[in-house]
Image 1 (spheres, rainbow, N blue to C red):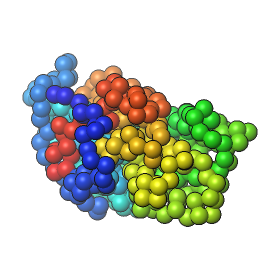
Image 2: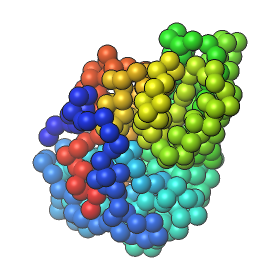
Image 3: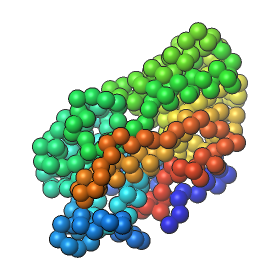
Image 4: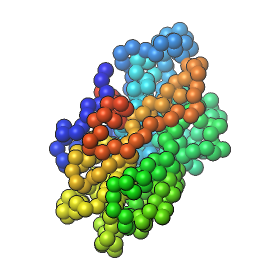
Length: 353
């Protein structure tokens, strides 16, 4: 099976197709909504004992997936989880939580009540998902965290985590701006405060920019929504007409910002994103998006699910699983994707059941 194709020049520069945005519409907040047998080409060598009854790996067991919301990034995390289950007989069940912490906890409780064997989480709120992981641990259900906020007392409840060093990521973004952009006012569009993700990028970015001539004049939550992010940028530019840089903490938000910059003919602003999706790469070929802190959403799901599998199958469980990241521009995007695909498109249909 092949990884995702390089999207540069493959897609028209338009908002992401409705199918992409609604890929997870089957994952309904409030209850178990996805169930399907996952099977593919070839099992995991040496893990045949996982079924517990001498049959195929994962027979009779379901892996639950709790996603923070419904966007392309979440669907890519799901594709990574499915990649980790490739060649097994695990079934797969998922929910999405509308970026709401109370929905998140209720959905995980619902999954646990229906007898899942393992759980992968993409948190909306670090505190809430820690409580959910504790509930899972009490039922001997191993949990993999696909967006670990860093060391905490909750770590005892996770079998393994996808360790994305967002302090380093923020530092990388700041250093890129210093090397490539004009010092001046900066607009920062965060994801969700409380998730444990944006705050760490803030930390690294602020430290890197200190004394550089770049000054963050706007910092607001965009909730990973393109319209919200666009509104923040629009009002920020009106209040600060000398802005030289915009930083958004997700491709889903940068896509809307890029479209806004194009519609208004604003080409003199360095716009930096984080993560990646299909649409973002079409903007990276234009003056409206300069670079991204690239890492693979699919890799986070893959690593978290592999930890859950190892715990269930009696394998060697690695708690801290490092997620690769780098600053990427249009010139090196293809190489970055080839080295570490941001999605596994062959699982898109299963992820949207």
